Length: 221
Image 1 (cartoon, rainbow, N blue to C red):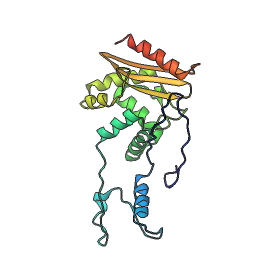
Image 2: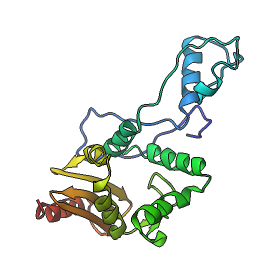
Image 3: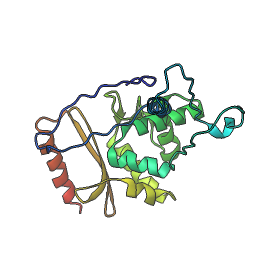
Image 4: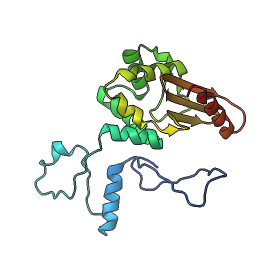
């Protein structure tokens, strides 16, 4: 769905072992526009009714005297956003976080993560070549060494415990998975170990590859 659009289409496939009852979740790219459209429909207002959404309400709430404030919604803390980004793989959150950093620092999206890795972890930028924040582009390139180094270094950060708890518990291990056509990856923590695994251009069934990686990680438990 386009950022300024009101309609979208969903397509995909279900696993062969999916149950009859399942749910599909999504995140809208423009939450303000979504709220306005929902309000217009619920109030039965015509499309000619003027509605606007102010993102930075603290800076402009008092600028117009003839406006009635219906509701003020505050963003959840960054820790909650990161939690659901990791737990539910809401790629849109990652995309918007990187774009927000790029906008705030007046840089391009494809330099945010490489610059962070170089300045904070002494990782050469060629080891982290990203073109988006969602991780869905086939043009993204990252090495296992870079991922492992970052995961190791951030253990000293004051916010590490929050981040670690945000990682999904998969096969009894705190780790995050990644998948794009013919590429499967896992990175996380096992006891005192930090690990990062990426399989590229593998042949065969995805479930089989996943189980093989799990069997390998079980050795470290």
